[in-house]
Amino acid sequence: MIEVRPFNTLGHANHGWLDAHHHFSFAGYHDPSRMGWGSIRVWNDDTIGARAGFPPHPHQNMEIVTFVRSGAITHEDSMGNRGRTAAGDVQVMSAGSGVRHSEVNAEGEDCTLFQIWILPDQAGGEPQWGQREFPKEARGGKFEILASDSPEADGSLLIRSDAKVAATTLKVGQTATWQADPQRHQYLVAAKGSIKVNGVTAQARDGIAVKGEEQLEVEALEDAEVVLVDAR
Image 1 (cartoon, helix red, strand yellow):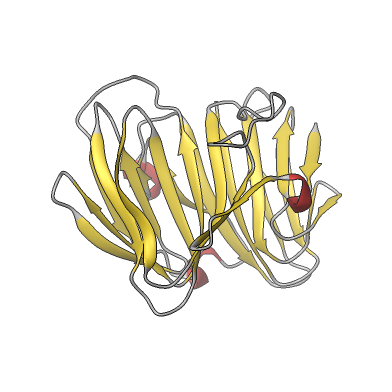
Image 2 (cartoon, one colour):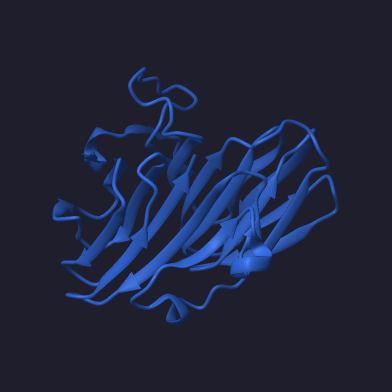
């Protein structure tokens, strides 16, 4: 099963400083048919204005992955962490038993990002945060795992969920392959460029929900950057 969810069907809220599109029910957007995909609970496509952002607020029992598409975001939290994550790079936060954090675009230009929430395998635990650079050239023509529950095996950032977050950059005509378990859930979004997934066409920023496939072949119809989550 491969279902394309066009960008113009997503939930949308424009707060001025924040222009947000929601792949799944979130805040004031509620669609009973889009409550999540497997253990993926949230996928927000956000544009945050210059010198603006989210003030300190709490989270618990959620794995939060931020993939920055352009600009940069600066994170601070109640654990004492502070870090700046720039375009193409990733930060993760395991909210665990509870944490407060802020996410601010301290730059002089808009920041665009995907924020992805994944349900943890177990509630509670000490909160944690991590960030690292992932040079785009390392994932040219293939998927690179950015976050997973087995970082020692794939060099990714740690999340406390049976899931993998991966990305690839493709030149027009290139194909990247992802080995999938038909019992699991995959969700893909092209940050830019139109693509085909097992022959099904999607445009930039469309959601692509997949289940029951043993392999995903992602073909770039234009130069593309694709983010994928594979979850239980």
